[in-house]
Length: 110
Length: 115
Image (cartoon, rainbow over all chains, first blue to last red; front, side, top):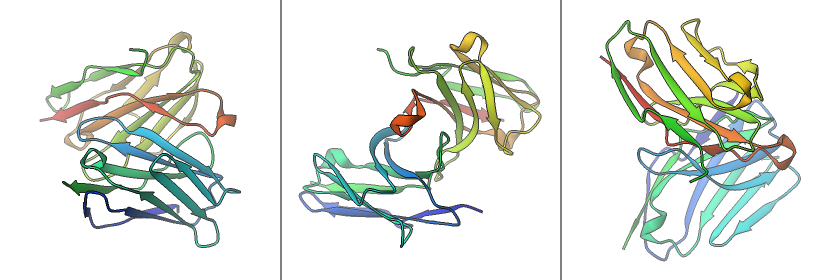
């Protein structure tokens, strides 16, 4: 069955540093992979989508890579700010429905 | 605000009672999804509508769960004879055509507590 794993440990980093989150998946080949941000008590918010034929995508301070050979995506937040503190969810997906990892909680210290 | 809205935001009920949640998607979106999320986990897919047609139901959705989307606009999710294991956040999302990669817009969720 499909399995999606994200960093099991929460990530605590100093403001200004780069946070790197990992998403690994097994037993399927997603056509695309999405990253969402979720704040406590709120619904996820879409951040980035990368397709299987794309290696890297950037949006402002965010960068996502997608390695279909390793079955892995890396999500980077550069020049991190306390406002980046949240849980980040990856969703490697085949079609219309999303399959999410458990998320990685990031805390950025001022 | 033209985002996805859900009602109620919180629901506390006793075991065995029926509950119904409502989701109003973004008006031009024809696809609507329900997910369930428990503490420390990512959202799990429950069901999906394209317009008024329910196209897929997860095996997680027991016979006690039913969802509707009359006229392809708002949707309701009903849970009959609630159990304590139904306690979770129920999230609704909507999206437009699949070809754009299916970016989904989520509502704030309905938090259900079954006592």
